Amino acid sequence: MEIEVSPEELAEIRKNQREIERRFRDLEGLERTLKALKLRFLLEQRARLEKRLSEMRQNYREMLEFEDKAKRDKEFLMAFRKELSDENKNLRKELGEER
Image (tube, rainbow, N blue to C red; front, side):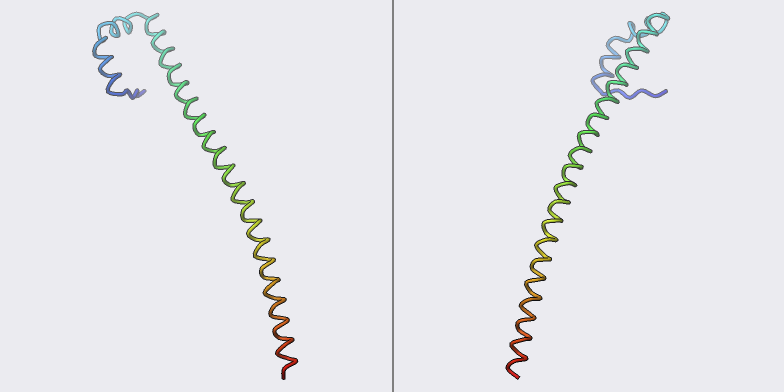
């Protein structure tokens, strides 16, 4: 098992080294330490998952906005295309009448 600690935590561990060693010799202390580490790990995991969930929600909102914009853009382009087609039809008609 590998435990990562920050420089501040390492300094605190070194400061309290005797207490930590005494705890590790004591089974109850070891169990308390293990529970504390497990709780810390679970809290960190929960924080990471909450952050990821928040990111996923934001990405989903952005995707919905993008989808709505794409639909509006498609409607605009289809209307523009129809307008161009009608204009081309009228121009061909005018050119046909001039000949």
